[in-house]
Image 1 (cartoon, rainbow, N blue to C red):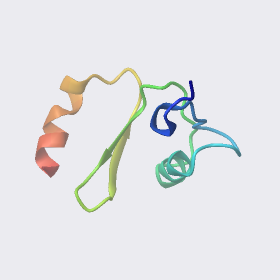
Image 2: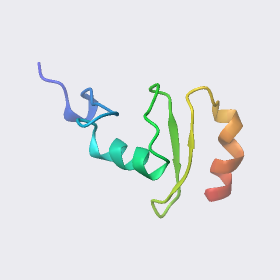
Image 3: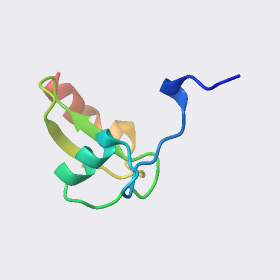
Image 4: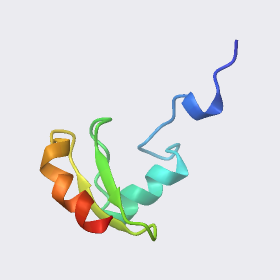
Length: 69
């Protein structure tokens, strides 16, 4: 059975990184993604608002999310 492309494993760092992650990393300072729970807050217009590390909890960014809704 083949894996649905939506759920296949992708790279988030390096030359083989998925184009979305290359863009997100470049636009937020260039620091590589250290762990898979890195979060990117993007507004309704597709602008990157902020990047959060893997240890940041949803509760810590809740107000920022609500502010851009």
